[in-house]
Image 1 (cartoon, helix red, strand yellow):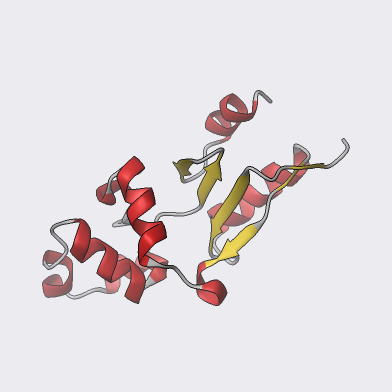
Image 2: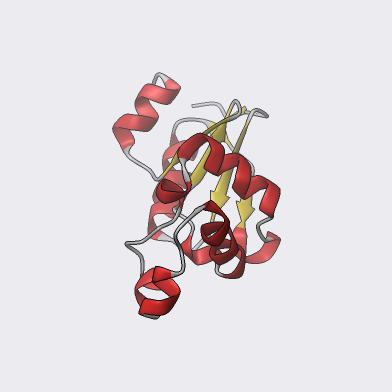
Amino acid sequence: MPTRTTYLMKLYGIPNCTTVKKTRAWLADHGHDVPFHDFKKQGVDTAWLKQVCKQTGWQALLNTRGTTWRKLTDAEKSAVNDEGSAIALMLAQPSVIKRPVLDHDGKYHLGFAEDQYQTLFGA
């Protein structure tokens, strides 16, 4: 399948994350060359987090099922009670951001499910 360069998309995450690897493989297998933003190397900024939270809600963007969240103390977890405190934690520890985050034509999609991507891309 020929590769289509898609300028209206960007994938955000951490390259060694299993779900990010699956997503990148699915996109490549379906001919999508999507720029990748590595949270660890390129960082995360407040404006971007606010923009994603506005669309998805901070509760959806905050990954409370991963090891980074589980390693937090109870006090650190209970301190996250609104968008501002969630963003502060995500800035300090980008591994606590749900991933991947796909920006597709200005709409953010969290996580990866093959059926969701098939619908999104008409694959």
